[in-house]
Image 1 (cartoon, rainbow, N blue to C red):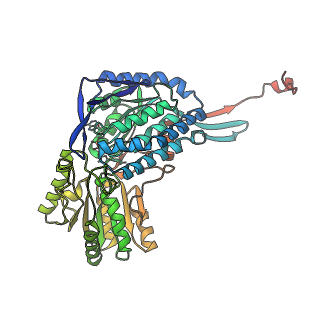
Image 2: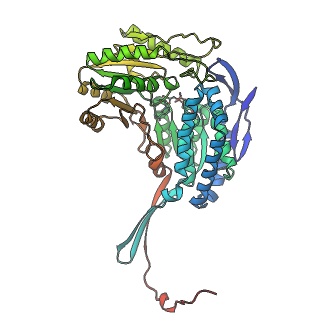
Image 3: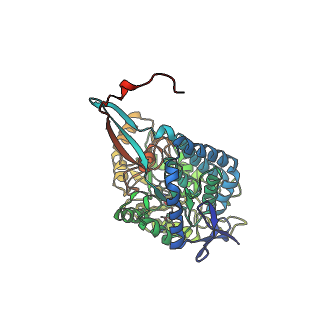
Length: 496
Ligand code: NAD
C-alpha cells in the first residue's frame, strides 16, 4: 500500500512510527496510509527551515518571485494529476477540483508580484535633511496548518506569500487527504526553491503541538474548525507567536421578496450543495423574507433539486461527491434527524442515497429543510454537508438580526433587485465577506479572505495584501547624514 511521508530539507522522508489510513470516500475503501510525524520529525523540519532562512532572507525578492513563476507553470502542467489526487482522497468531482486549484494558482500569481508588494514606504525630508522609511522584513520560520476541504487551495493561500516575503515554511496538511498537498509542495521544490525553504510534515495533534510550542516558529497560519482555531490561536499567542486562525461558518443568504427567484434558486443549488457543502463559504441557511417568498423558494428548490446527482468523484456528470469520512456522513445525517425531531420539515431527504456501484461510499444526498428556527441545534452549529435549511423571517431587519446574532460571521449574501436594500445590508451586516446576488463572495487573490466573530481569530485576513503584513514585520528607519564635507573632494570623471 502507498505510504505518504514528509518533505524535509528537499528530500522525501518516511516516519513510520505511527500511521493513519487514508480513504477513498467514493468507495469507502482505504487507499493509502499517511505517516504521522513524531516530535523529532517535526523538530527536524523546523531545524531545516531555520538553516535555510538566512540565505533565503537575503535572496532578492525578484529572484524569489522567479521561483513562483516556474511554480505556476508546473502547477498548470500538472493540473489533471492534481485534480485526480484531490478527487480520490477528498471526493470532489474533477471540475470542482479544477476550480479549487485555479483559485490556489491565483495566489501564486499574486505572489509573483513580491518585488512590488515589498517596496515599503518612504518619506523624504521628515525633518531638515532627514529621511524616513518603513520596510517589511521576514519573520523567520513560519508554520501553516490546513483543513481537509481544500487540500490544494488553502495551503496555497499561505506559503507562496510567506515564502516570497523571505520566510521559510513548515506545512502540516490535513491527514485525511494529504497527497495533493504534498505533491504540490514537491513541485515548488522542483521549481528551484533551495532545500529547507518549504517543508511538509504530515501528522495530527502531536505534530501541531510542536509547531505551536517551538520557539523557532515565529508565526502560525491556521484554517480549520472553530474549536481547533481557538485552541491554535490561544496556544500560539501564549507562546509569543503571531497567529491568524480561520474557523468554521454558518453562511446565510437572505432571499428578499423582490429577488429574481429563479436566479436565487440556481445560485443556491451550487452554493449549498457544491462540494457536498464542505466549503467554509457554502450557503447553508436561506432566510426567506415573507411567507410568500419562502413558499416560492421552497417549491422551486424542491423541483430544482430533483435532478441533482451525488456520486463518485470520477464521474464528471455527478454534481457532487461523498463527504470526507463515514463518521462525518453519520454526523450530517444526525443533524437532519435532529432538525426533524425539533419540528422542522425535511422537504428533500438526502439521508442514505443509493449510489449504484458505490454502496460503501460516504454519500449524503442534497437535503432541504424548511421551518428551521434559531433555537435548533442544527441551525446553531456548522453541519458541513449538502444540507440547506430554510428559516422564515417577517422583515429584512429580522433576517439581518439572525445573521448578526449568529456566532459565525464568515460569508453571507443577499438576493434582491433593490440597490438601497443591498447597500444597507452590506453596510450593517456583521460578516467579513458579503455577496450581493453573488452566493460565494470569495475574495480574489488581490483582496484578502477572512470572516468576523468566531470565524476568525486574529487581526489579519488570509492571502492578498494582508498576507504581506502577516508574514513580515515592519521596521522604520530614520536617517540623517550631517555634512562632512566629502562632496568637495568628489571626482566627476567616469571611474576607470
Ligand atoms: P479541523 O479543525 O478538524 O482540522 C484542521 C487542521 O487542524 C488539520 O490539519 C488537523 O490535523 C488539525 N487538528 C485537528 N484536531 C486538532 C487538535 N485537537 N489539535 C491540533 N490540531 C488539530 O478541520 P477540518 O475538518 O479539516 O476542516 C473543516 C473545517 O474547516 C470546517 O469547520 C470549515 O468551516 C473550516 N474551514 C474554514 C475556512 C475558512 O477560511 N474560514 C476554510 C476552509 C475550512
